[in-house]
Image 1 (tube, rainbow, N blue to C red):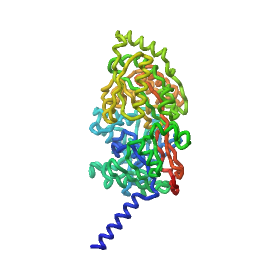
Image 2: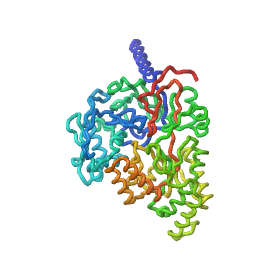
Image 3: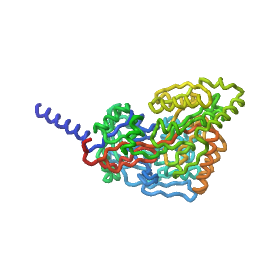
Image 4: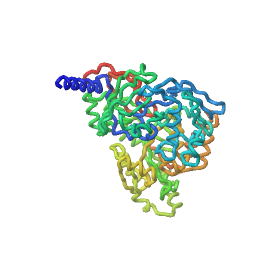
Length: 527
């Protein structure tokens, strides 16, 4: 019995040591991922985990280009609507082969009318996809077919020049076809979890930590330097920074783990904070279905009255791009087209006057409008500044109302608000990632409820033209969006990463997250 106990103690110690290996990268996320099932994801923390644990047919590179991942080759029909994907000989983390049927079943599950998938609309370029999701057609009529175990056929309603970028997003990652049946809660339990990505789920202590280790069955496992990653879950920004400074964390990514606002400028001046523009934005959303923001002039008055330069200079301090256009320039090959002036007080007052006349009301009837936002230190400061600016420029007093994230998103999706502070990030590397959500008023991500037939026609026309003409058409659609102003952008984001000097090859995707597949961890040095 004594020998047995000694053996078990040694075994436990070895297992614990292997899970907390000093060669593992240590990082943090601000909270529990909502889901590890890529079909159901929608938040940035979950997306980061999906990219660690799964992989799709294509993959976004850190330079913005697309390269093949699980796909070995692609055939495209001359009219641009028929894709045939030939898969590599890749494997799940349990050693079983990844098949075309895994992709087919995962995508069809998303489009099942009874399956919860907040980003299901991203599959709508596929022929019959939207009608299937709405229950108007059966799943058998969906244009996704496994020709054989390594060949997947996908047909589109019309050409989508961004389709290979689109399918690099985590929503399009496969899940093993029999998991939903054999283990319905597989996405919550490491013992049942199976992925096909560069890392595999080894431990998940809910609300405390996640440990992932290199997936030995990943097709490019030999190219991944890190043996594993230890991910803590701490939401307090000052605590996180102290852990980093004490050497308890190696990497902090502002995208998924907050850094104190007071510390950002100091760290940036010291050259410690690595900053680059990414495809995300903070914006104000107007509920165009309710008074008074059903009037375009009232929306424009509030949008033009914002002093964005003051917000970026005094609050965010991260070299952000003033958002005088709806689309971040990183999604437009660096092109910046200002569609309006920042802090345009004169025009704001003119728009306010026109709006009051059209609505037949006095300005005092706009007092006490409620501006809602999800609470964080940054969001709170921005909301307070906006409150002051709108009073100073328009003479209108607004009320601030804050909610935790889940409640805030629920109010936005149900359009239970007047106007609100929100944020969006590109799910794939193309302007359509932002523009397509305004194509239909009923899109769950179209919080404004705005819809315009000319805007719809422009997006449709952009799919059947040359690339140069497509850019011009999309810019015209963006111009219309800004003129109608169902949303008014405030600033486009920059990513900030704190990385210890012993980390090499720390690169960030234009959509936010670091590329963990390239990071090298050399011998840790004392602080």
